[in-house]
Image (cartoon, rainbow, N blue to C red; front, side, top):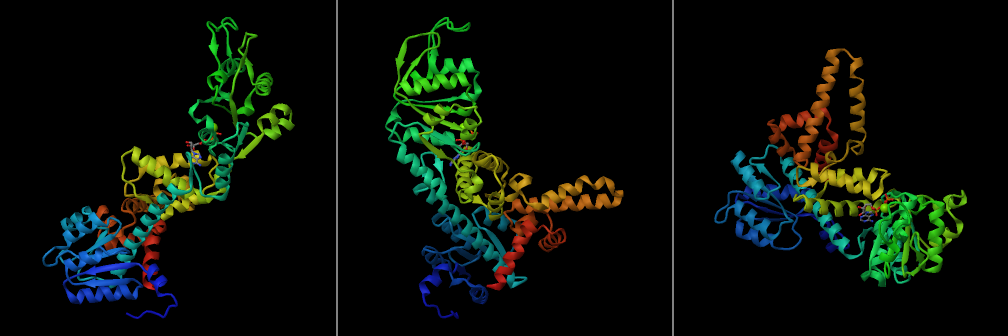
Length: 490
Ligand SMILES: Nc1ncnc2c1ncn2[C@@H]1O[C@H](COP(=O)(O)OP(=O)(O)OP(=O)(O)O)[C@@H](O)[C@H]1O
Ligand SMILES: [Mg+2]
């Protein structure tokens, strides 16, 4: 093996993908090992299954290429053993007697793909190993993301690694111990409610109630009676005495959501309650002392509401002792993969699906979206994707069409204008559009694996490849082509 001199061979070795090749046929073994070495892999070549198992137990292995037929322990058993002990290692099987049964059995036992000997084209070996390695790298990254999440990017229920979210976490931790009022501001879906919960659970009041009320959902009279309670006969429907939420939250926290929507009259009553620490039930003169920390939230610009006269200035300053701004998701895109993986884990567990992660194209599409609905929108998109996902990971095809890039939109626009074309031309275009979508979907189901997609479509591999080229299913096929090119360039 020729290795270019490197000042730090250890570092060089760490970045080179490691492949184990096992075949009792020395000619094949040498050829495969050599082509993979030339493609930039660090290769361990062994002639029998016992050695293969020993080599597979060494740390750092990425991909194993195993002959199905080996003396003593057969390749299928080696595959099962590796998958049991090192599930993260991707395995490619080689067989001289390719039947659908062996292929299915190998894939069922956890193999990534299989190769048929003699190889039609030696590049096929490099391409398959390359794809297996990419898959492993993707899953490693997912595992790392999940691992990272445990350590420093989670704060109560809030997730975020961006400097802006880290600053929010710090702020919440810093003011948790005081009883000062906090105003949470941010667009819809940025996590204001979660932040209110975090504030409560980080405070000494955590064992007392956290009472939340959505101020915009209630009429003025109802909101007042909800907040302060009422006595019997205070108004038509007041058939009995009722304790208000201020009293219910005594010793704890009262979270007033959508505070920007409260009426001028309620603003006055709220201000009084905050200034005096006392409330009066509606229809009563009796004063009740309460010890309540008030947290408010709004997706309005409260300062602007105040300047324009819709929100009392004195109340504004009273509520805004500490202000925390939840940044929109588009301003902290580095949080998107973390959040996406978090929701992916949550929904796949809930739906009993075994999804391992997200394809790079899917993550890319998420990263490019503007997220007007912020984290809530992302959560909904991932929930939908988990429902739709067919393979082991979420692909771009599982995302809403509007996120799938320009091609989809071009196609939709094309479809609407078909009526202006002659029938034969329109039909040809419609069929082409269908074929393209069909190929994309089949590929997505097969996680981008051309052999598997071809099999699923009942088309032989070379014809399938030709169709991919013809219909330019770039989103998936192009990645395969790039992979191939990358494999050759190495
Ligand atoms: N940083 C985050 N980490 C994890 N989940 C989050 C985060 N931010 C928001 N979410 C989730 O997104 C959804 C919306 O969050 P939340 O209800 O707190 O937003 P909001 O700012 O109160 O929105 P609105 O103004 O519409 O009431 C919730 O399901 C919440 O769990
Ligand atoms: Mg909210």
